[in-house]
Image (cartoon, rainbow, N blue to C red; front, top):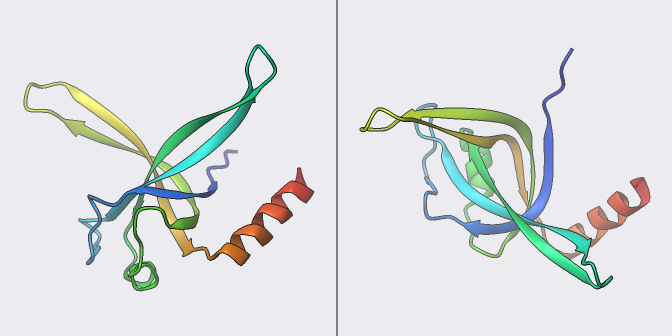
Length: 122
């Protein structure tokens, strides 16, 4: 048995490859940033950003994201997939991305409520 699910709350970092009319052959794509907190050797906190590629194919989701822009806070729910690409020189590259089934823009109140729920859950 396996389980493949991703749920992220992050900030939109890049929408340069964003398609306004996604289809089964041309997904809408954007990149979100999440931040991991850790302690340095001296005990002071530091933060490391992670960047996640998000693809989605749903026109319904697209209608909800008309106002998507860099800096928007988003909630993403989906699963991991890997895209294989054969380059002109014959090499193969792989990109692991989140195939989103749900993407919600978050306002400040929604984001604080969600963060509070996650802290209680931990």
